[in-house]
Length: 82
Length: 82
Image (cartoon, rainbow over all chains, first blue to last red; front, side):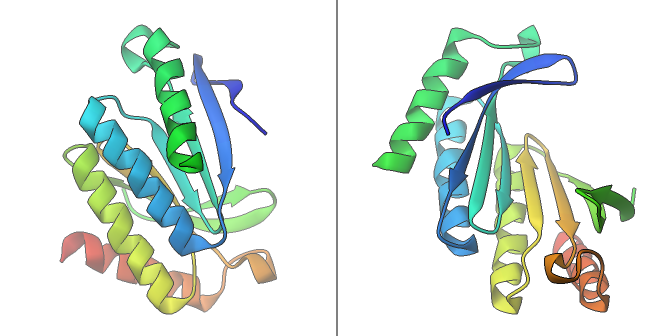
């Protein structure tokens, strides 16, 4: 599965589910994405579960998607693959 | 706000929203709860957002709530307050 377009609270968002081995690895990936978010000053929603992390990128200020969200999605993939 | 009972995918869960100052503090609290979960071998769903962490405890194996979930909820409160 790759990124999909979802609408939450009337705002379009980019969402992807990442599968990890267990909770600890999911937590570690959550931190990687969180650290990237802090570094860039752009913050996603990250749902941490056992063996699974769901990341949603969008730009609340404009109520939807900005070019930057697509860039952050691609960088999230890089964190996952790298 | 305190813990509320929610039903997701047909399973009753205990959910509480914790307000934090910013993303970094929300991430730090996510890790505290995650570390507790790993230590206890019982894993919640944790939604990390800017200034906000939503924690859900339930026992997937029984499709709902076990006494242990209420204990973990209380311990999550202790992490937040302590």
